[in-house]
Image 1 (spheres, rainbow, N blue to C red):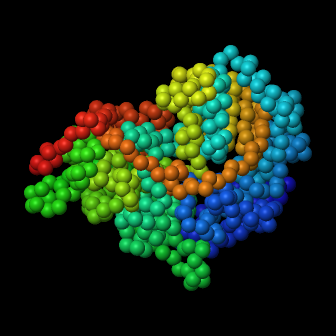
Image 2 (cartoon, one colour; image 1 turned 60 degrees about the vertical axis):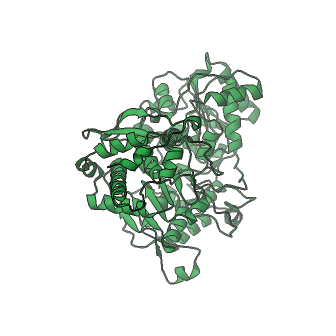
Image 3 (cartoon, rainbow, N blue to C red; image 1 turned 180 degrees about the vertical axis):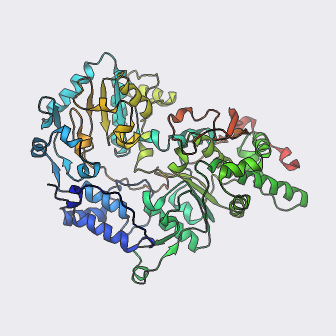
Length: 605
């Protein structure tokens, strides 16, 4: 019987209307329950006070950045729950596995498994008894080495990792795997913001966000696309409500109307808590059709183009930032020509918004001098995610909202340190320059052929083309591909398959422990300067005009399901964009030595 009584109860589907604000007393009560049921209350209180503090550790929850000022409490409800679970006293040890076979554990819910405890020693699967049993560290490493050395080719192994690993661990992990001889690096980022990395690298020259936490204090307009901060990164609610309070526009675009994007009660404001008050977190809320964001963005760009022409006719101030476009962009006229050719009827039909609503959103954007655009997986989890993100970049470039304080692109990661993994070299398609640097520094030949991402790795294992899976940070199937029942051939990942040898280092539950062998991991420490808003530490400065404009053309609406999930983000740069399709692929930016001005912009009639 679990020490957590809720975990032993059979889950019952239920819906209970909630009329209060996000945060507030509900969040405090939930944190208190998680803390008191952790079986380690005193120690966990000290742990929570070290969360996101210099000299402490990074919250193992979301990827939202940290404000630079010090404070007693710098965690949210989700963070407190994550810390209390990481520091739980419950243990999954030899006694537990003597009682439970792997087959019996497969019948339990993820919720029940989560609350059984953490691994404290390496465990090895025994097929005869269908149970895990303890193994020494030396024997565990020897077993892993035996499996790897026995493979005919290094490419027969898959090496999965996630943002739960530290930067240092991720760097050593990729170094070890490349020394072994493969680039098979399926990673959790393949299924969340891979599309952002691909799109931004082509549009602005770097696949990461361009804002820091401080920029939110200087923005006079913040757009939140396809994102549920109250659920996924609650600490973002504070800068949003502070922006509304100082008079900035906060525009939410999401088919789902989440309470956190409506109003927020700050648990650290005593007067607000005592009076049961709250503050709004938006100034406008638009609910497009699923997958209709691309059309909304195109409509906003079309309004800007119309207003730019009107300004040129009347001598009014320009709508576009001509100096920025002339100095830092390329192929502007081609892009504007495509915008011009996209019919309003198609934009309205695909967007799910009225023409009046699109115009309102465009006016809010045009009014802002410093604009930040944020997005999350409501944007990236579509087949046309890359072109949609590039359309966000296009809209921002038209008014020069990149590379200045209070403005920029902000892809908000869902998990802490997902971006750190990629920056450290966890990449199945590594840049040549990176591989060259590794060879010069460490004096060994690295593999040059591309490896597998998550989707490719799962299909390869399902088809029997892989013999070994090694995991670091979290489990593969429920984490990146839904429940195992939704993954073709997922049953082949069971530990009783003699040809599947998995290692993993995330200890929270037996389901993560379906491996041979399983080893526990330690917590990661906090870097003293982690303030980037989108999950990446440090400000990203653009050196030179590497801004590229994807050219898009209008086509008849196609049969894409609006909620289709991405299958392989590296293929997103193809033609399909949910009815708005790329005509000629991406275009290059003009090099600095050949930077051209666009006097034609003055003659847009």
